[in-house]
Length: 311
Image (cartoon, rainbow, N blue to C red):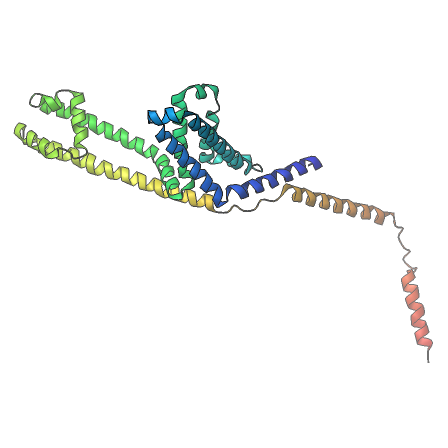
């Protein structure tokens, strides 16, 4: 890694650290929530024609200011992940916020008032980002979609089967409710909420006593069994969303700085090169004769003799 690359990496880390300090501050979330609240208030106020005609210029200016606030907010959130851009796009809320803000700058969106208002309405959903419990609920709704789709498929199949059975049994006696497949399906869909169940049973008893079995089995399967299954899917998704939110709150283990790791590699390489140089020098040192004592040994022998000759 070159010096320029190391300096650039250090600069990105410092930029991300400063931006993260801003985005994690309490006042930053308060400002964002206030901007979203003002945006929602403006959307409601613009439904009154007299108010819009009188304050049209001021409302337009305020809308541009809010767009600037949201743009600065998402820019700071992106800069907070300057050292790891992939982490920014792993959060679906970041992708949603960026899409809502960037779409407002597209030319065809500016010219289409309806799409622009829908985008401004989408900003209200961003409130869930700053409210933990609401964020968990929204995440749970998203995770419950696959289970809800399966629930709808099973419910549609049951509704179709019972609508066909009701048309076959009650079409001639009660054409108003079972005269066709569509009417039978609408009647059974309303009965799924238990609305008018008593009247339907009384009308069925006038046709056949077996109608009680028809309505009892339908209510048991739809209003009790399927609805409880849907509740179980939602509760399971809520638990998954809560666990996911807790995982995001856990601090990540510190990552080793690339510059420090590179410096350690350089030091190890320098130490290895120094050892190789010492080995080469050691080979060049001539070996001592076996019978000849070393200089240090000669000095030791002389001192011993002098000590022994002293009375």
